[in-house]
Image (tube, rainbow, N blue to C red; front, side):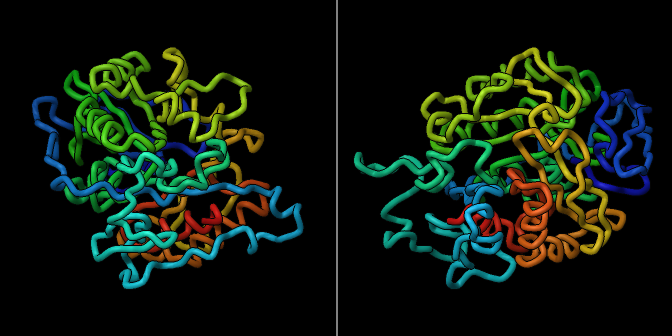
Length: 386
């Protein structure tokens, strides 16, 4: 789940089967066949530690949606018929995400005849209001593996907090408010403490416990939202569990029994266990710390142009229930203009459909850089027929 980079900002992950990476100061992190070494001075404070997130904003409901899978094609409708008729809300700017069911940053939207002011997705004061799971009543009775989630690649790396070569414009709190429902994160040990970093903690960092506490707060304030964390882990499972416990997030994590059917979003919300956690290298214990590629498979991620995009299997096996589509461009660093191209409606939707046709399954996680440009939320909604 990393980015390609030069001069010390290397890709964070490996196209080969994942292996535990060294976290020492002189460790090299290979991600897209580019090596970079950290020559951090142990006494030098990391850049961007504990930078405050953007001011709190009203929660914006998710536009994540359903994965119909190849069975819909078998019904004789063809790939194009699977998508819904959802489009960009009236008045939305071309580069602005569409936030249904809520008052957006640029104005309000109307869903099913009700204004956003009269029916908020979470915490609706009307006792008879239907449950909306990740913003939609239609998602509640779909299994987790039938839902597509808008996903932020290197979610911790963001320009608002001053990270170098940032993959996202805004911090994690803002991402959740805007509708991101899955995050690709990198964990590191630095100066004896656990952080979210990318390649080197000198390029930007946030205390792991603080980041997880922000997620906990979001879940407490939004009781009908289901999230996923996919972690490129450079720390132990034990250290990860410590941070989860300290932040309170361990109260929300879901442990999936091997071979069991996936629960519906409704049942995850009812149980309170509504955060799936997967590690690229690690594995249980604890029970919630799944080895991600026992559950999922993904595509390659080193792409310089849209013509390079493919749906080939990278890590995991296609027999696994979950599918991560890595969809970002770097040449060699992340760039918002490249993301604007990659995240354009037709580019993003056509690749997802191509991957469905080749693999028999729509991606559960559509992972992009610079989520705030392009049409991620609209495409995810269409993929789910909403």
